[in-house]
Image (cartoon, rainbow, N blue to C red; front, side, top):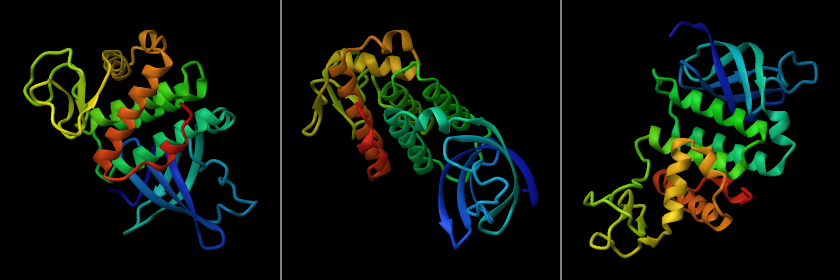
Length: 243
């Protein structure tokens, strides 16, 4: 990596450093996840303080260091924070998206850029407000699991491959399971919830938005539990999401 480089990035989170600086965690388009110091950003006279807030798509110039990089310049490309922060449901759902991305993404470069593009698209959809926030979140979580190789099997038995429909889901086994493969701990699941998750994974909003509220809630719990199982700890922001 060159010492000085530019990239597009989404601000995932920030936290203070000293009296005036801030550490910024970025998901960049071509350099993976990067942690960088923005010096003096907490001063009122900072020239780019407001541009380095979560939910913001930026064009950033960074200087690579041994550990933390340093932010030299930043230009806002698209600010999703305004419309997202104006609505509690959107804010909590989008916060869960950023936290999950931060937990699941490491510093390894993703040549396909799919993770970055997925997050940008999900934030843009969330900010637009045309799709209910929980549906955008659940679709994003399922697709993120798929990119990580952890998407639940929803068409055939995750253990033996028998074609469904099946009426039990075992997160440890990797998805729905047939009666013969069902083990203690597997949960009963309605076929409507399974179909709803298939629509969410495919981005089929026409069918996803017509799901009944109990179906949406059931699918949301399954998706949240699947994320928690693979991360081996809960995503704190998910507990605040309005469903």
